[in-house]
Amino acid sequence: MRITVINLKRIIKYIFVFFILIILLILLIALLVKEKPKEKKEKGTALIECLKYELPMTKVVEENFENPKETRLGIKILSMQMGIFNNIIKENEDDIIEEPIMEEQPSEENNIEDTEETEDLDNKETRVISDNNINEKYTNKYQNIKINNQTSYDISSLLENASYSFTNSQKIVIYHTHTCESYTPTENYNYEMTDSYRTTNLNFTVVRVGDELTSELQKHGFNVIHNKSYHDYPSYNGSYGRSLTTLTNILTQNKDAEITIDLHRDAVGSSSQYAPSVQIGDEVCAQVMFVVGTDGSGLAHTNWRKNLQYAIKVQSVADELYPGLFRPIILRDARYNQHLTTASTIIEVGATGNTLEQCLASMKYVANVLYKATQE
Image 1 (cartoon, one colour):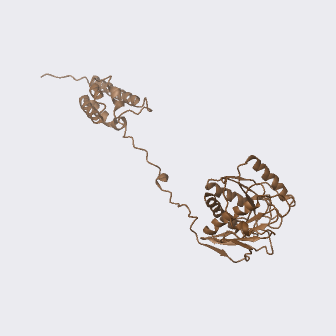
Image 2: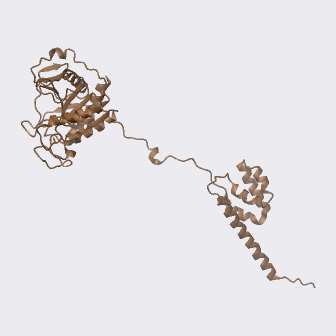
Image 3: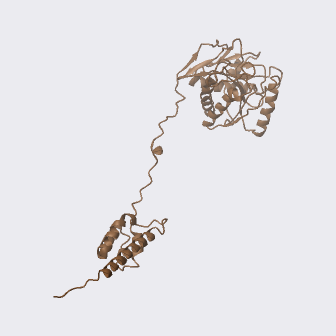
């Protein structure tokens, strides 16, 4: 009988060495795969680069690498020939072969269309609110435009041809001779009066209304200069002299500015509850009013007729879009710094009984009117 002697220690040693080599090979493959993470190789590149120097069979795979399907087939054939390495390759195949690069999908935010529709400002029902308002007074009419002529001038012949042509309407100057004029306080706009319906806090005065008008005009493409200087504080007397200096300096640097707006609030009058208002759509808005000066006070003012024609042109557009938004134009003897351009006016927004909310609501409609008027 022949007896075979098995050296168990030697067999265990070989098995141990064999598995050590397998582990080292796995680590080497993983290291080479991660060696250049920034390079986006085609599927299977890391594996091919790792093995082609060790096993000749990988050259066949590399030659067909431009075809990913052939590459994967070559890898499978190679793994079968490698025998013991087959399991290793299967375990690491997902890591070695990159997943297909997916096209970047737009964020959910971008996929959602802007559902907020642009407000249609041109088709809104308008109704004058009679509460806390006064009856309109006027002496002349041009078409449907009412004019309250408080001067000694006969303007009937002027109204026969009241057309106005803009030379440069894209730049508008807004300033405030009576900077501190304010409105009836509300919960959202509550403030401490420094005088009767006046405050030095410009967040609650006609200056805040001027900010709103500036913003709305800019939406229409106008270049707006909004001056917020105090002209009636600390002294009310001399306000127009100080605002004349401000406006002159602005126009010296902006000679192409044609439209200037001295933005006011109507005077207290006989009642602090006086609140000229109009409902446009679902909004209650303060009524506005042009005040045009002349040379009736003795001060030189050759532009007053042009200023009146300009106001009539703008108000005719307003009457078509929002009848009642503009009250009758007032023509007075004072000059009001309107001699500097041909489209200079006072615009009074609301009165003491109006709230700041109502005055702010009016501004998008006033801006739309000015835009439409300059496009004609």
